[in-house]
Image (cartoon, rainbow, N blue to C red; front, top):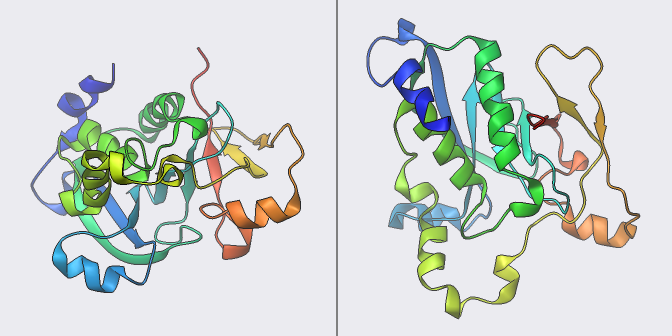
Length: 215
């Protein structure tokens, strides 16, 4: 059960050797953040860094894991802004990856929603489960405001940012030969260029999807 992780594993305060750090890495989606940031909001992407890897959530059109891992502070398509310490956990890597696989079962790429289930909702839920703390409110404040004013927003704000599941390897703890995630339907190359924003290989960084728990 997801709610039981915190009580067993988290250390909110204490010395750096209290456990494995849980870090929130925040990225800018637009240069306008340089101005909006000081007003307490902006358009941000975030990922959770644990055990030397960063984990995030992105959109695609398929009912499979949208949770991916990258090298910390290098998520392709975004500009790294800052890191925030969320706490520490005392959890073996194998147990942590089991937790991630359970999260991947919940966060499918085709369930991504800019206002109600975006990358920051994912990192907030991961942080809450692992440390008992929410991520800072300003990271996802624009989505919160958008939910309140959703009747005023264009339909395009309700759509995923990626229209194709790219050819990236699944990550599974202990797997020697990761499988490849590919789309099942051909997509016009012009559409791919326009829609591959979050996980574009051309923007650098190695991206692997987390394999979800098979139920």
